[in-house]
Length: 108
Image (tube, rainbow, N blue to C red; front, side, top):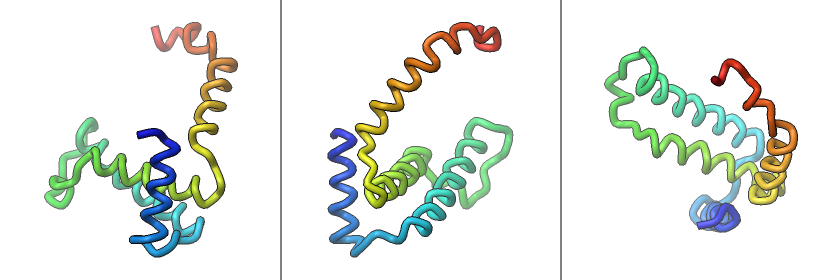
């Protein structure tokens, strides 16, 4: 499955089962909620906090997927081709950061 296919599949689902997209600001708020849920599971899994009973049934995989889903919705709504955007982002990082991390004493 390509990123382009995922964007198309999410769009098709939204326009049929989901009826329509929530507006961009609503989806931005939903994205923040989903990132918070992912953060809570990460903190309890890899950090010092213990799980609440209500968090025990939550799946890290599902929380990542929820974040990705809403991010894809926002990309679709704003006309962002995520494949193209990621390719350009790789180019930027490979140019800007080609030696940056290799020369960082904190990473050695």
